[in-house]
Length: 130
Length: 195
Image 1 (cartoon, rainbow over the protein chains, first blue to last red):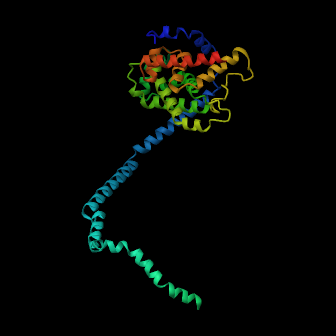
Image 2 (spheres, each protein chain N blue to C red):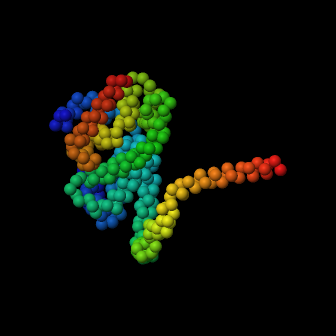
Image 3 (cartoon, rainbow over the protein chains, first blue to last red):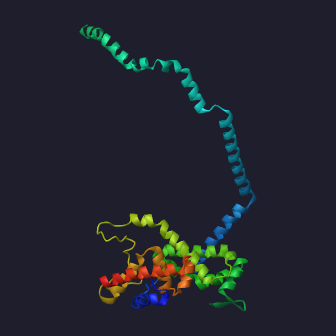
């Protein structure tokens, strides 16, 4: 790419001329209305800023921020000294260690359930016949 | 640089901006009167939507009012103001890109969105032949350029800003502006050759 901007654009001179001479017309604007709207928008912006600068919104914002801070600190303390979910889970598992030692029996529980159904098959057939 | 009177004193744009920083309403009104047409034209050229152009050019004036204190006077006022305006317009386009994709009509496979295919208000759609048609398609092609390229072309062609000023407006180096312009004009040249 050429270093000199004009030289760089020289090859596009005709194209640039075409563009310059055919710039699309901008839609008509009522400048009085435009300035009136601008004045209203500026006034609204000023009013909004003024409202946030008043003592009440400032106090409300500070109060809300303080409340959130209190909740955050309180929540942190609660989780620090209170019952931790992980600890609770570990305790429950610890209590069931005996069950885990008999895990081979637990594994066969479904099989035992099926056996129970098979044993009662005669009884079920008898019930249907009656 | 323009100078109009405020009372009996002739003031430059930069001096008016300093007065706006001191909350001088009359100075602000003068700056608005001086730049409203240029601001609207530039915004419309980038956005091609009359309502958005009005809103964003007005927003640029509000930002000017609010941040007049930050105008250090190192750059020309016009450059500083164009920077505010162009940034607003490019941000707006970026936010609306998703919407433009939704409005894209895939039926003809041309890749142009419905908005892109709206004729420019100044171009007569009846002129379907010859040079008028070529020029019309040329500006339609400008509308389809990448936002930065498009802004660079509009600032160069329409506002007639030198490359150094375009670089300041777009917050990039002069070399980057030249790349934007070169690529944009190459694309436009191809469009002309095709039509």
